[in-house]
Length: 115
Length: 113
Image 1: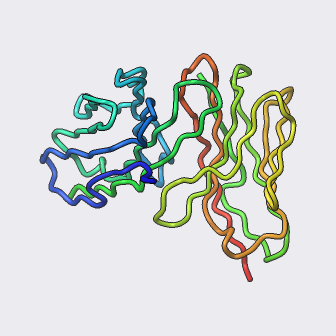
Image 2 (image 1 turned 135 degrees about the horizontal axis):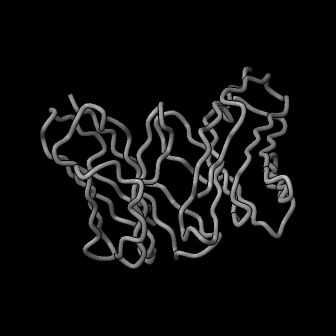
């Protein structure tokens, strides 16, 4: 029974390069969340989708960040151009439905380092 | 919007002692309060949650209490073991914020053998 799948697990890139993070939610889940975790800012919600539609992107730090969910089984978070301050662990999580009291299941995360 | 404060930021206890982590929230509409445990280099994993219609919930050595009037909730771990060492996050969700969870800053728990 696969959980949330993220790729790559580690990404090292140079400043200015485009970075694409990928997420496959748990089958049957229709809510998907992208988080960023740093020591300074903790766990921050960047954006979340319900039934493939972005519901709240108020956490997206700036226009360099974009996210898509073209279908129920795939989402991407893109940073273009990347900057050293984007270095963090990016988690994707999914939930059975956008309703109260539903558990969010986290993926293993992508550790991004921007040099 | 919702704001969640978590204390303490670090907690060190001896094996076998109890540990308590406290969180306060600001939005009285919040009705779901999960706790996540994150081991070093791993993903956050749900360990227990509580809904606003319940005051306390227990699962073996872990318990969570909720005081809606005071808008605070706490995680209690009894008979702590070294494998309880991790970062613990509380979170709150408000009905008027859809599926969003607002997380506390985390508590790094260290259980010394």
